[in-house]
Amino acid sequence: MTDPDLHTGIRLADQPLGVRPCSLAAALDVLGERWSLLAVREISYGVHTFSRIAGYTGASRDILADRLRKLEGAGVIERRPYSEHPPRYEYHFTEAGRELFPVMLTLVRWGDKWAVDTPFLRRRHSCGQPLQVDLVCHHCGLPVTHDTIHAELAGA
Image (cartoon, rainbow, N blue to C red; front, side, top):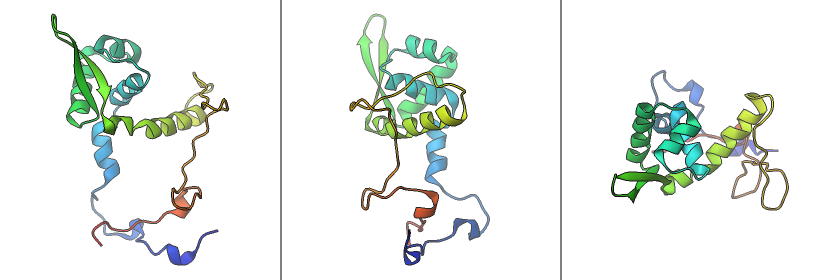
């Protein structure tokens, strides 16, 4: 049950037509491509070298190099040298990259339900139970759904 007085935000569908600035669009500029997300997946699995990331994703070397450079430039990952001769680097998450974890879990949950017949992995929480990730409001503890949020212009 929600209080109608709480929903006084703007209705985005009623705004003047035009390309709108959007954090989702900005995030997709960094992450919204298959090879970028698969590289993030591998780094989250503990795969840190270029050749192993390429091997597990199937990305061509030139495409993967481009995506890793883009992720590094956006501050999602950082390169760390592990060999001087020849020069070789590992890829590790920055704080921004580590904060992608719940986003990736949500995408995996969606993919398990809607994109594959049988999930490749089953995930369990450290308590031993099957992992179920829910979005909840940190203030009140209620679920976050399309109907429980409203938008406000940030500058207003």
